[in-house]
Image (tube, one colour):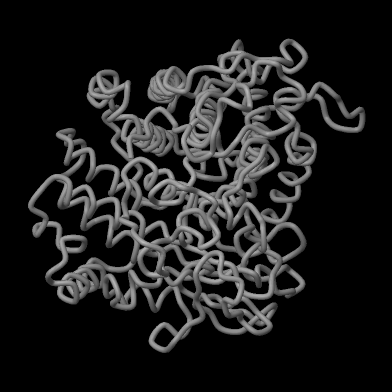
Length: 528
């Protein structure tokens, strides 16, 4: 009963604070909505809502980076999803979803700034605000930051320089970590307690997670105008280290209306058993990293794709005659359909599984790249490379409500088999790489595989930054670019989204339409 009560309260609060999808410009107040609350109530609400809004980035990234293709018979003809012919009404959810949750986070920050007893809530909110602003910068570049989230006090905020925002995010994270270190175990402040539906009030884990976000930001910006800043900041990580476990949002999902895991609800079935996402199939491109075309990986392949050893349905983005899955989109591993679906290992584990927010595999690959670039933070590049592969398998090998990791013996056996089956490939056997370029390609390619149907947005940003995994030509196994791309760049892929029409309607400070091109106006760190 407690789990059901908690999620009911959370969902009620989300309606009051976030689901109306206000952005920082919206000054219309609903007299029927709550206008004040407490940090203890707002924090779980916004964390729960972040789980739902995460799917906006999940779906966009999954199509952009080649994890998903369109099934035949669905209305994709001419859509921006497959043409990349973006206008200012394309992908607007990326912008509005972030600012919706940022309003709630700013409410916590503002209401706790002069309330010392709420210092832990203030710190966590600032960490999550940094998380969201990196997403915005990575997709849009310059965005409202220093003057944003002020409501009626400033409805036309300035668009801050993207690189300047990145630097301030590191400052905000460092200050938050200091607060958590200082007051994390203090009895004089209000504990996070059950309001924390991610780490259960464990402030050390929040510090480690903050270090993860900091590492992601610094890694992204290391070969940009911020190189000097980044090199210095790499020496400022706190001693608590990094979160090396999968980070899950778990408000207490249950199999009833609006309370089951949002990923399951969007890609498996609704709580009534209705099939969803029938327009989605895996791409031929990503499948080639498992079936021997590029790499052989039956271990993870069989945990992801139903009928992996046979001929599972797959296709190329933009091909309107792609196959379909009969009456249900169950190309992923699992048994049964609708309400008869059972708990399983793999990607969609159960209706009540926690939502994977930041994978352990990604953290290891970030640490591997840092070590490759001379910043040894926690283990060598090769050790983290192999730990990242094992962490990816470990997550897939867990089932629905089971959080128990695979044994060391199981993980080592998987890795050894994987390396043996790809004995001549430096993309699997790190020691075979002979140059730093090959080592980086191995790290990013394995990160790409590990993020398959886990975090396509992050994989997409990494492709933009590095050009890995390599693409060429137009065939289904040589590129993940859509066959209907309107792009004329060598890879035929865009580099960013465009600012929403609502911005141009309401804020005179938005960069002019003519100055932004989806295929050529790169984010400051994009040197690919």
